Length: 306
Length: 306
Image 1 (cartoon, one colour):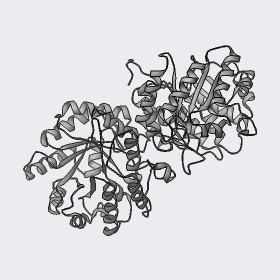
Image 2 (image 1 turned 30 degrees about the vertical axis):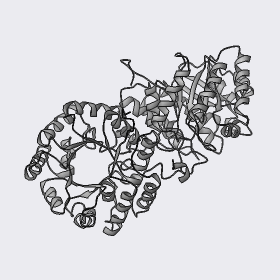
Image 3 (image 1 turned 90 degrees about the horizontal axis):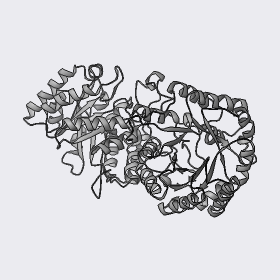
Image 4 (image 1 turned 60 degrees about the horizontal axis):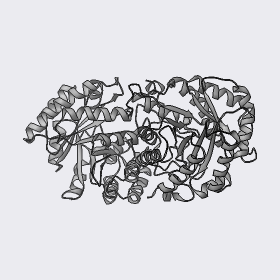
């Protein structure tokens, strides 16, 4: 896959954000912190801790400032938070977070549903965030949601992805960018192809991430094909915590332990200890009301190990 | 993936063999035939109908001759049967089957457990089959089981695969060959690498197949990476029927509908109608005692469709 003699990939853990918000009753802050500590101890070097959104909309994320206070000054794991608008970004910066994830959907219907703004309004919010911060996107990732498929509009055209990406790149040329398979319906060859096309529009310095779900069974393959295109950051959730409100029986983010297995067994280092990760995933799977989807976690543990 | 302008792959359906044998109580022959007919009608062009083994060992396969009688002279779908030894091959040929699959494991422990022979004894059986038929392996596929991992011995060395393959190739140079991920523990990059290495030992004319399970969540990715190496035949089971006796909660063969989706959405033709395949998979999933594992089948049907 890589020309390097010791290839590696970064698995960016999103269980505390995309996963915890899927659990109906907010978890105690101390429990969240304890699970996050376990994930850090397993070797996770990047994590999305939560979202700065209205506590009325997502009460599961009301304790972001308290979590920030706990991890203040912590080295070794870059901890980011998702912000849907400039107000959320200000709140996150006030709470001490320096690593922000701004989300905008490629499809109008999903963006309206997700952040109650048109795509153009969201891009204005991105402009405001960059302008207020006085930088070109450093410390910022832009998540392009529904970059393949939209739960409301269906297939999303490649041209639409290119258009939103180009505008966002213009606003924040130093940001990281992610193509997000929000619904899990993307297929591996299309994932690789879309990243290749976006990379042609981007600077060679642009760092890319892929956010995927395993709903249609493509999770592991999509991650590998994204990596094959040159994507170095793959988002996943320990235990596959998540669930998908529009698809009965569907699953959450691709399980971190499944990806750790896929990459490490293939000789691509993740820096994550599989046993410790599986132990953390076990704790997550035991959370009341959590819907999980993992393969590695349910095979006999000695068979899952390297 | 392919240099051809219209790439295609053959999904070889194994639910009637690897799947039906996993259901404790033998199914009525008419029910089997009816499901097989549905699979053929969906566009399946190759299918493994069952095994010529002792009815005492696997009573689910006692009606192979009756099934052969039903499909005698049928065009459009190549129907093969698995044989563990020369006696099984004779019985299959007597029943009118011309397309045989001979199975030998790379690992001694699995071969002893599976067919009660050493690897050397199994290769002698292969020699007898080819010798009695007076050909060089035409109409024969050799399945190399445990080509990656063995439920008893663990990791299987690449050199061992090469040794068994080379001997089998010497005996049946015109046969098709399959590397089988019997336990589902193979990872995508290793799958691709092992096929590439075996292809170096083979004739350029050798046709290759991959047999995989989704137990560790690698099923779709393994199939795509096998295809990427040049494998043109991918085995799978509608509804993911199967199960794995040594791994609690584990799954069967990778679901045909998941692979149909992965290939077709990526522009690689399978010739299989997704809606008809899903309808057949629904029937299989409804079989009493059947353990299934499919992603496409459980998402809302309109979302699964192209």
